Image (cartoon, rainbow, N blue to C red; front, top):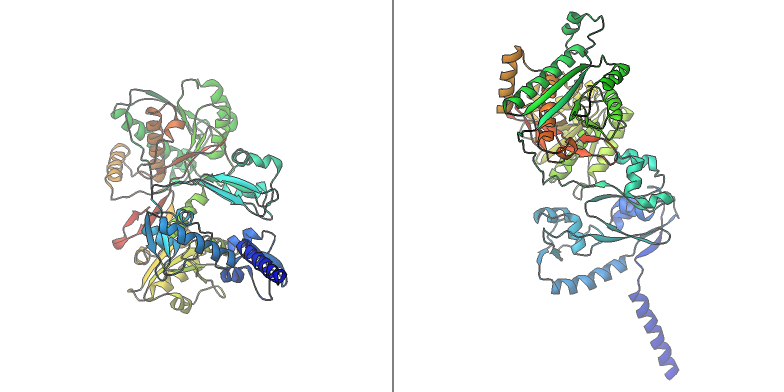
Length: 580
């Protein structure tokens, strides 16, 4: 009898022990027709989290494929046992979860991040149970987390700075692909991740950049000093050539017109600064748009006393000068090779294309509040790729689970597609991608015939030539919003005052190149005047001039780049305004 009791006791003890040691992850065999997305939904987790657990598995795995999924029993027991005890002893603020509330909406309500909310409540997923009580962390608390990297041989534990942007290495990742994706050099990637010296390994967590708090912006303060500034302006006039100057001036966007207008803007900036008491010495040279001529100039000019070189206008030539100098060389114009061109002394005024597009994407993610999302564009491969990428980025938002895609059929988009997709009672956000004229006309015209009481807002990555046949009245009605690297608010006092002075001096309205020349010079010289160098001054905050925003960031071992981008919205009465 004692033996039987002992055996029963042993069985019970074993069962209790097994229950108390539930594994965090278990194996799961994929059934026919299942995808990573359906399995993730069944387990209350995000697709990307499931893919991180199974980096070698495709999004549509074959039947009978064995994958790793979270153990539901483990999560339930762990959450119930820890949450009850910790909530009872918690002296801070708490929140009772209401129906349809999400982590994102709760985080917004208390002005905290989702990550801090999950950390405070020891949560591993984004799922919430209606009626449950959760802890609300203080807004001032910033913690460093110890994150265990799973599924890596020789288990690694890393400490991450909350401001670091991290990447989990998955199948097919390479140093080259990561460098391109995050726009950093191989050297920068290695500097931030010394472990890469041993090679790239599946499951590694790599630092790929730093987060920037867009809600806290330092504004640059203009100050006139008694410092004398020495400036070299390098412009491609080609004076020694046999150019027909009158014919060149007759062409609106000729190199001669661009160069002259930029030069006049520079002179306006220096006149303005000197009028306020700032001492400036300016030397102007003609590069003739020739590398050999530039080298000859650099051999004859005394660069020891120079504070800054403005120009050459074009990025390729500016890089050549920066490579030979030990002072900042400011390249004012955009280049298609913007991302790949770099040097420690090079300053790139024009933001790259990705920064401009990110401005709109970030706005959509930060301001989304349940709007009906529609993405439309032409059927070219490049636009379809953009649609897929934008859709994937937007789905990272906790509240966005449905995006409607509208594409042309037989070259055009039927009105019925929009009338069916539009929510007549709610708010609608329509994002137009691509630069096809017909598709642009179809989208705007189809939205234009929908009753005016319907709340519709149109977005695009730019306002290109595809909008040339679209009336401003149509765009105003749709509150058309797009990002751009330059913007002159013609109603602002600064723009009115500048235009008046420019016309009084040169008897013509300032072109965009003249405004660029003024902005680049005025801003750069003020940053140098109040700091030991341009490099120091570039870190002193954001500034906004007549038509350019300056938000400089120094790349590790690379150039200084401007991240200043405007988000422009058509308002009532055809008014254009910068909203972000």
